[in-house]
Every structure is written in C-alpha cells, then in structure tokens.
Amino acid sequence: MVKIEENRVIVYDEKEKFISNKRLYELEKFLGKDFFRVFKSVIININKIDSVNPLFRGIMNVKLKNNLETTISRKYLPKFKEYLGL
Image 1 (cartoon, rainbow, N blue to C red):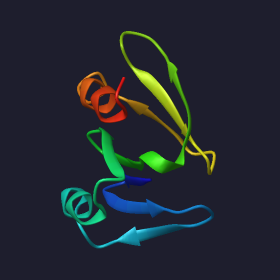
Image 2: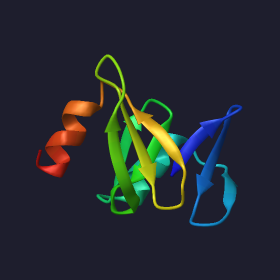
Image 3: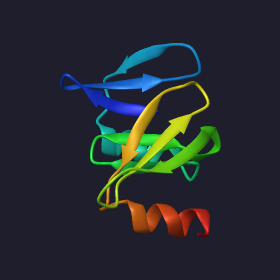
Image 4: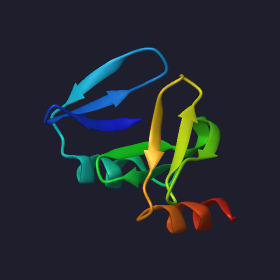
C-alpha cells in the first residue's frame, strides 16, 4: 500500500513502512498495472487483497494480506470493479 499520512508519502510492504520523496501520482505511474488507486490518497497492490467488504453509502473496506485496511471510495469503486471484472 502507498498512502499519504501527515503530508508524507508512506510506502508499506509486508512488514515495514518507508517514506518516499516521490509524489503519489508519480508512484502510481511507476508501480504499474498491479497497483490501483482506491482513494484520493491511497494506492493498493491488487495481488495483496485479502478481503473486500461493503460498508455504508457505497463505500467498501479492503483488507490486505499484511493486515492493513483502507476504504475504496465511491469515486474509485466503479473502476475498481471493472478492473477486477465484476
């Protein structure tokens, strides 16, 4: 997962987190097709999804295999479903 926290871009792997000096959109282009933006400030690795669960008002929660969680906003949900072939 790549996420903006406290005005810094944080890159999470399976066990650690790192601070990046790149902007989120730069990392999005660099990371490639296995990574998908699910919120304005969050990019996830599609291959690391453990579960996706509905919340309220069209928002969904995604849990990754490293136990990190985030939401998929209504704005990105249609493209997310299309990407997964749903």
